[in-house]
Length: 391
Ligand SMILES: Cc1cc2nc3c(=O)[nH]c(=O)nc-3n(C[C@H](O)[C@H](O)[C@H](O)COP(=O)(O)OP(=O)(O)OC[C@H]3O[C@@H](n4cnc5c(N)ncnc54)[C@H](O)[C@@H]3O)c2cc1C
Image (tube, rainbow, N blue to C red; front, side):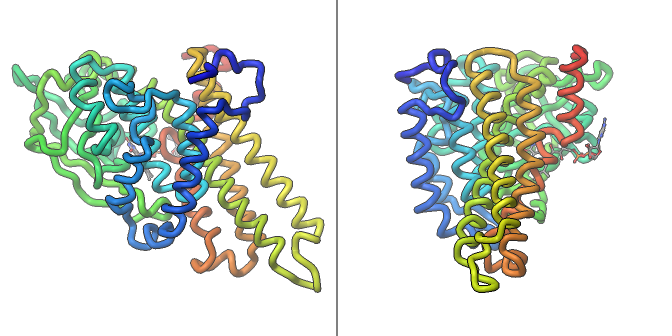
């Protein structure tokens, strides 16, 4: 980096360093040339082709913060945010695949992984292995620490038994960060994070969800049936998984803010263009003040989403406190994306309501932004706790 985040503090949040701009432009070009032509097909088929995932590895966007000595780009968290935003502008599904890889999986290993875990997994995560993050279960979503998945100590290994639900990237992933409890009587203090490979005995990927949006992103159940995990695959300390979950999700939700800012930007650009092509009453519809005001509202919501998201990411990179700002970014950007994608359909009129035009997909894709990595209610709870000083 030729300019550190610290040096740039007095600059506008959206001012990018040369490295940031170059990286962003490369991803934008990739999204336009390689992703956009196949977005509708991926959505229809409900999957991201392996060739697309390989292209992401080649571009260096699957190991953004992984140190260079382990094959990664050795870049900042802010870079991940830029990448996720750019991808989501074109396809929210590919964006979340890359987001989970960087902001949850790589991030957790970077912060909590032993040297041994990093040396064994980073080179693969930077070059060929997709990762997934498994906290939620059928009975524990917002109340994530009520999880029931058990980890029993068997001497040199743990045996994991239970089921995980809603796991993004599960169909493609080779490695999973799985939260399980070593002792339910200890409550949240029993929760432990494990690095689990798809090939471990007793591990299986179950049913894939048939979803409203981000249809190309896989969301599956995990079945752990006495899954044998070596002791050296405990991530961090036994009983500290709750801390890993809270802290990675605090960071991860900045990525979702970026995804939502990107979705909103993508929907907006389509409607801006369409408003200058579509004619009614002998004029372009962009000549009507009602449409102009709508476009102005949409652009303002997007700008605010981006500023909140960039600020949270830059705070995180400088080591400052960012918990409230991260929750605010996700809360605001997900609501803004709902507003913008909905209004984008209105700008298109009846055409926007059909699958022949691109905006209905943005509308379907945005909704998950208010659900995963903590629902809107949970973001409000985090913000309120921070305001009231109760942590
Ligand atoms: C597409 C998709 C991908 C996902 N990917 C992952 C993944 O990769 N890994 C993973 O671990 N999880 C993943 N999830 C799970 C996601 O994090 C959960 O769905 C989410 O945390 C909400 O949990 P829930 O669905 O059980 O809803 P619930 O917790 O049952 O919530 C239902 C409603 O009740 C509200 N509510 C609950 N408690 C309170 C409260 N105390 N105060 C006020 N309101 C409350 C909620 O806000 C919500 O409106 C994914 C989910 C989806 C849909």
